Image (cartoon, rainbow, N blue to C red; front, side, top):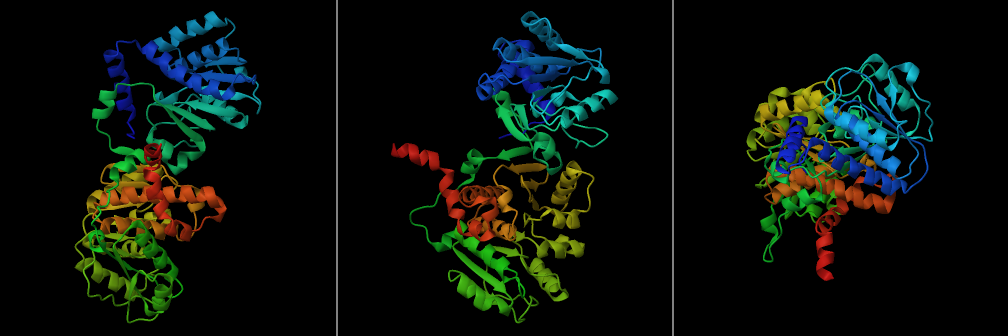
Length: 510
């Protein structure tokens, strides 16, 4: 799914109005009616107090349409207009007159703190004050109104975007924003919805297709994509009947140290379960017996050192090398990693202590093979690119880093974001149960395996993140968030492949 910029969505509105020969008021009616239909289907006539806060622009116009339709269907509705300016949009004014025809008592105007209505946790509040149109700081009393609404503990549904939130700026105490339970947004999600610092404002997200011009949406180039099942299906490469293990590559996984052999065993298991033809593990001698016992399908090479990596030598030509899990950052291991970087020309997958070594030895970055994939968690990322002011600044720094070093960076989190130069691929699978030790090691194995199977590195990263998250979703349904461990992910990656075309397979059997 494409994620459009605000300017692109505004242009989509204009193109739609022109090509479909409708007015902006009719487009507003269509969009707001779809929101009403959704709310109506869920409330099913329940007589709970509904309070709608409308701004005086087009988001407020949406709120007025929703309020009118709710009134016409017998709901207990109070509509408020937040009068923060003397400027009103034309569509707002048209719908203001329409709602007064239904009930002349509404809307009620709020001009300051003295007009704030009484709110209760039993209320259902619809926020239609600003939406995506906010482009200037809030009036002081409007900010206080937002705080007041948030403190009510009522259920809040925000229309298009929580009021007070900018499309490209994280809210703060001096620029408050509605903390919605659900955000019902039009046509396309917005980038900010997927950033950690915005999570408490968005709540659950729902995207409503309002029928904007298909040709414009299809042809418009974006640099942000949301990855769901339809996108993942397009990335999958089907196997041929006469394939053999040599067709699916040889992955070399290097890492581990005394007490941390489990990390590379998880990576190797995930690589095998994702379909690598051959997997070789290189570890200190202390890992030999463990790895041969746990993973009979993998081959094991060992360092001369018993406890850590200090001399990485191997007589094979892998299709991809994955380095870092459990490796430590000792002087000896650092030197061994530098030698690997200098010798390796194919894209690598670098995780955990591999990233920590790069952070401590920035001169190594010039040796990174082009299109290598780095998979840091937040702490590792900060050590790699430096501190950031907010999540937007973080993305800016990572894009700059990606372009400078010609690498792919996978920012792990609730919505893992794969960054390649200026392009963002935002994953929409995964759950809190995956916040467990070793989950990242599994992800590295999945991505490594896909590269060994000749997936392009960027596709391997994007597709691998999707499969990893989807496996977590499938297993959490069976085991709960709390019961899920990394080993469950590593051994069940195959389920996410089966799920890719599950509906199609079922329909063929009917």
